[in-house]
Amino acid sequence: MKIMCQEHYDEVVRYAKELGDESLQACLAKLKSWEQNSRRPCEIELYRDFAPYSVLFKQRYPDGTLGIVGGLVYHGMPDRSGCYTMNREDRWQTHT
Image 1 (cartoon, rainbow, N blue to C red):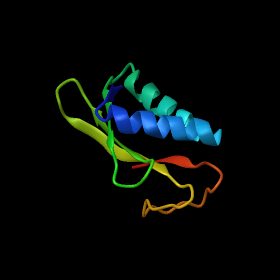
Image 2: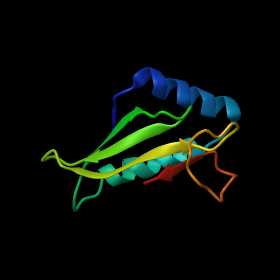
Image 3: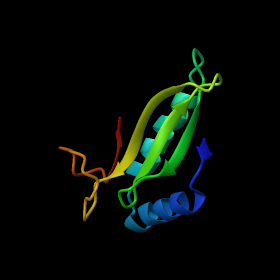
Image 4: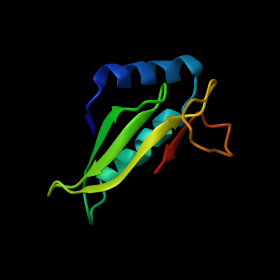
């Protein structure tokens, strides 16, 4: 995993820990599992997102092409992500 926004990433991880919410770690673990796909390995790049406490991700393959692009979106209070969710229990969710 390549973190392109270390300061923002650290802030988001710290905030999730303060809340005692493990949904961010679950989302990150899912992305890490994509990197280890034996049929088509990739690297996940993380970027700052416009929404507070959210992170943009890009799936990049060794030849430079992109796979899935999405976000680890924060649905806490206030939710300024502009994304729809029916699940209000997990503050962070993967959106593609």
